[in-house]
Length: 187
Image 1 (cartoon, rainbow, N blue to C red):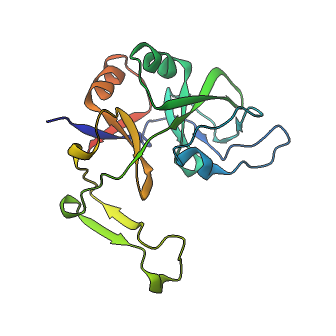
Image 2: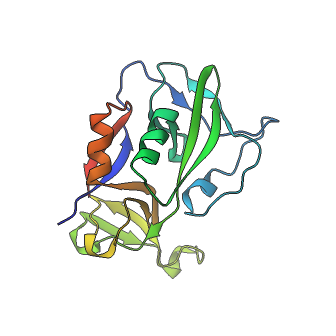
């Protein structure tokens, strides 16, 4: 059976940087949710990430709103592995030469296995958020149904898009390449 992992930021990495919300060339904050919708984004001005906390740069990290920011080493590995369904959007990080990219996963899959998760709560009509009714409000101890994933190697989960899931072969390749800033939790 295929195994999948939530690709997460290793927040406890000592002396590491923390990136803020992306801004445009005029310093205006960009809409952060656009990077979690699973849509191809047309090239525009290069997003810039200010440093909330200066420190050691990482090959992978979450900027504000869990936006995955990766170094070119990460992007090049994915290209060598012929990973589909991902877009690398050029980005800048204040005070650090890159190149850097926003990792935009282009697939969103309805695969959360509610029964196997520790806790699942959905938005209800009485919550007063009709735009979210039926979507997940809380997911703890995430588990997915691998049978619903198909051939995807990287994706976000429908209704709980803060999660970035990778197949085991990508996890192993990232670990073998000694990419920094990541931790994995099996889902």
